[in-house]
Length: 467
Ligand code: NAD
Ligand code: UGA
Image (tube, rainbow, N blue to C red; front, side, top):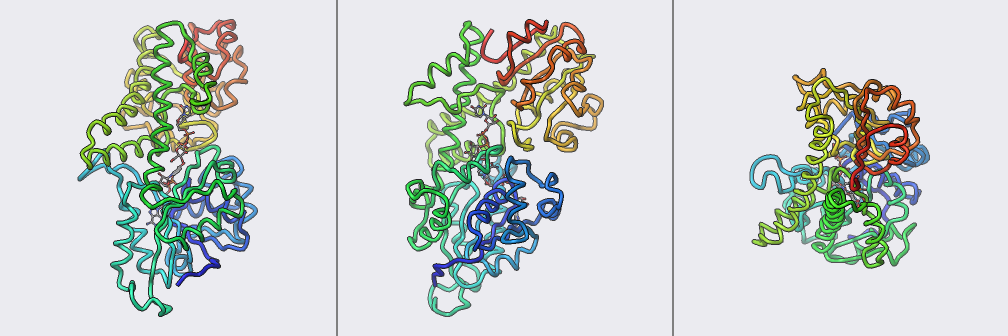
């Protein structure tokens, strides 16, 4: 039943996780054949584009890996059936967003893409297949996947020796990469987590990672610990950001400086200095949905106080975005009517083109609501993507998409830095100042600019977490 020498890997879902993760596995394991499949034809076309700047995901270092492996042992296609049929191991890397309607709407995870993947596997797989949960999932999802697979017609728990009988092992192997640093995170992970019920399958999946990851960093647990650990890791990370952002507000009131406070606090080795950057609130597709998922789980088990505790992290995050919008309006004399505001950065963090849950979305919408004209510049997010996030029938005239920071800030009343792209700190701010309407404001929500220098040039400056 077990094939110790696996050859063919299939990954369902060619997104931010599936694409980069499989590119790294293909690069590190040239003897394995990896088929990344997706139902989204345009996405697959983009992965196969000969122009590497057209890949569907912007991620530093990804293009080089794709160039090295694509067409050799890494293939992108929409042919799910063929890829599943020959696979020894199938990674499920599909999206798992929050449910928008029905039972648990607004909190629970929508498992419809997981379910459809499991159904496809049940239909097309042959012999023994290791099914790996790569997506982030509610605890006990492995049970659901198992039920779907085991109720398929071809599955039989007896007569396992017959070659065409379908059998499965389910493994949880959550992904911890962060966008913008995905390739480095995958090549040098802090840990690889593998949860499962049978040691043979855990060993097979460990052996893939052992090609480049130190054995000590490979942690094996039971299925439920693995599924829960992923949610908890994201909850802890988001909690740190909400904590630091809440303190940024106290700093502004008291004359303390958030950078000085985080340095002083972070040098305590028990606390650590990472992930203490203040900002306009966390974005990205996962923190919010994974905490909501955890909150739902707590309520499901009757742990109301625990649920409320974690839910507060999301509330503070939204509050941080709203307070930034409010103080921009307040400083611009309480009205944004006939004012041009330059938005520097639209992605949810630097070095990605991903805009999911970006704080720029809510803040932009708040400012448009006040009749501002926004001139938006982001080095990687496309015009179409920005408009998709914030435009509506009534506000098209309020949104301009610009090709450079200089173009965006011309005649603007204010610049708001919402993403910490490196290029913003080295701009010709003197030139920008000259071209803006006065008083010229800079709102630095990422604390990434030289406040003293800007003030010296003549700007009015608000920088998060200091006064
Ligand atoms: P994504 O939306 O970028 O990609 C998911 C892909 O799956 C889409 O292209 C979609 O078309 C495809 N898909 C859905 N159902 C399918 C099916 N039945 N058959 C074939 N293709 C199907 O999502 P993502 O950002 O890659 O996230 C995937 C999972 O990984 C989520 O659970 C997420 O929480 C988790 N995760 C994401 C990150 C991240 O940085 N984005 C990091 C760690 C974990
Ligand atoms: C996050 C986690 O870091 C990954 O470990 C995890 O795998 C991933 O979620 C996931 O499950 O999707 P990601 O969202 O890509 O990764 O990026 P982060 O670097 O965590 O940033 C998330 C948000 O927090 C961004 O908006 C970022 O600007 C903000 N942030 C981050 C801060 O405001 N301050 C910080 O110090 C760090």
